[in-house]
Length: 237
Image (cartoon, rainbow, N blue to C red; front, side):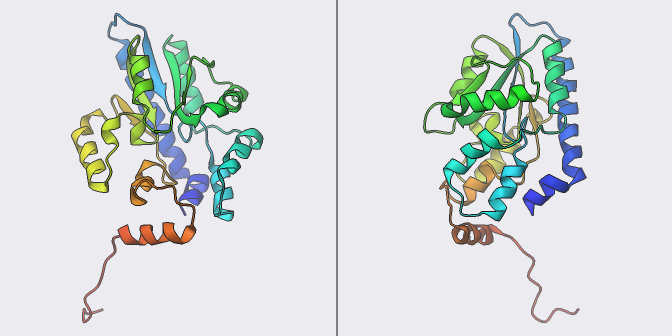
């Protein structure tokens, strides 16, 4: 249902536009104040700039997926933009603000990723602006810090809490929610979050950070965490 919502819902589209409208407002506010360092925006790629809904649809129809399927998608799938992303990035570019595309795609995908972004006409592309995952861990903190060492980062844009800070890398549902509560004043200000009900860190927590490929195992964990109303046995109808 989440993939269908992503592909067909006008509400999803509206939420994306809303997020990028907020991002543009925050950018303008930041530029109204002087800074002694070059300004930069850090933005995630998948489900923030690039829309992988066609690949997600493939996974629904072919649940026993394999890692190489994603690489086939990168090479052969038609790249699509998240609504509002192109206009926002064009505004950042016009303002003279540096754009860093921060993604956990692996370095082997560099050529395909740059090609996808280039086909869509996005600005400021190059190996120095595409920050790919180089190790086994999913943390983006080192790459964020490298940008922050020489730039004034005015905005983070992503579809996952880990696009903003490792502070959100809790190992439980409760820890992640608590971290969000602690940083509630940052959302819509320094952090702009795009909607993504299809997958991400929230789902990995359900599976205890294991990459599960068996549909039966995923279904077990999903039902385990699902909360539902239970009417009393003799409750009046």
